[in-house]
View 1 (cartoon, helix red, strand yellow):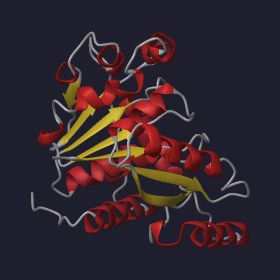
View 2 (cartoon, rainbow, N blue to C red; view 1 turned 180 degrees about the vertical axis):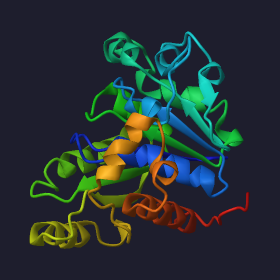
View 3 (tube, helix red, strand yellow; view 1 turned 180 degrees about the horizontal axis):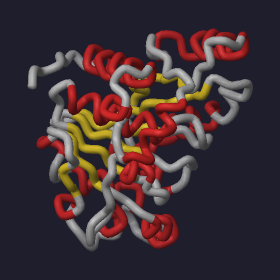
View 4 (cartoon, rainbow, N blue to C red; view 1 turned 30 degrees about the vertical axis):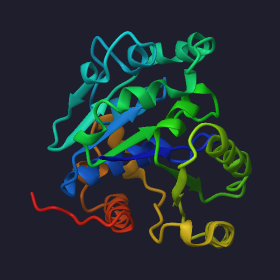
Length: 258
């Protein structure tokens, strides 16, 4: 059965979607059959891989109007699949409110295909609303990107409280997969101070790899390519490959030869 990881932080602009896209692509490149689920109405993870949702998207799946198999598409790259979204998903928060099992719609949908993938990564929206709760209910673990800036830990307390509440009431098995420091400018003392601060707070949950601030990482989505395809020698590509290898190591898996 595939490991399902929700990538979430209610603070926007922390590299959440960039991480979901590039980690999914690297895991696939390391021989893992990977499904990326775009749970953000902005649909940036979908377009970041050069994809568009078809007739059915995650919205139709959550509303019970389509099976998830009908919205999963194979990307241009081996072993990498996408369940896409677009702005239609914005209506799901309101439309699901009166549903009895509203937090479990994604979990129920993914149960039909979990055993077909090694990893399922969920890109959650930058909020703690019903869509994110669906992501947390469906996940085995949470990967939390934190930007290396002054207000880095602001809001993380709220996120950790939400994870605790979800663990108590919705998903008792949910754990923190890891904390990823992103957008590090190693030339500044502030960035390095934030790294130390986050490591003191989260200790061994922090990944040893840090994602650098990178122009190339910002350019890659406009070309519909993950960073290791767009610029394989860039610092961002090297960092995300190291992250993928660390995720495999923590999950007791090894990269498979192509």
